[in-house]
Length: 191
Image (cartoon, rainbow, N blue to C red; front, top):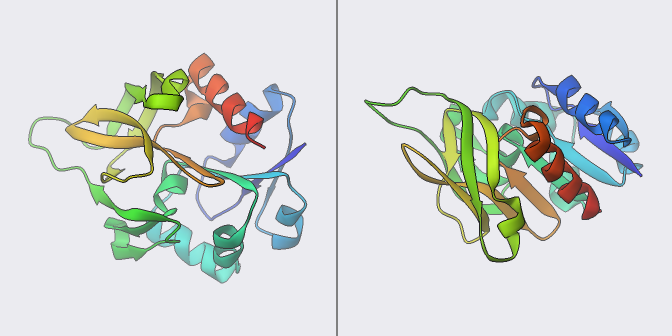
């Protein structure tokens, strides 16, 4: 098995690469469609801004590839955001795979971004995903019918989403110790 980490112009590529390597997964980081087509699954990593990531994907002609792929695809943090229709961050039209919008947290009491451990409650068939994970986000997904997990920070928000062969998580599994490792194994087992 081979996982392709999509270099989408953001950061955090090495963290997810090493997390998968520790699990014994053959992994490549690339922005080449030809190379990514050879992978069994894809990961959209989680640091950057919506506008920068979408411009990079458009420039590299990876937007349509990701939209049309039948490979299991995991979007982490910003990688999850770009699966949606729209993000308030940089006023960005995203991939439109999942209906809904990404909004900015607004608070007078709690700090933004949310930084640290928070609980995710998995729904129905996804109860096994319930755990504490590490979050680092100023934006969140609004309510969507594709939510399979929720968390609370300032307000209730979608922290895990699934549609067809796409999974998104607001948290960073590569920074979430054993819980994150279990989440990555869950994704790998879908391939």
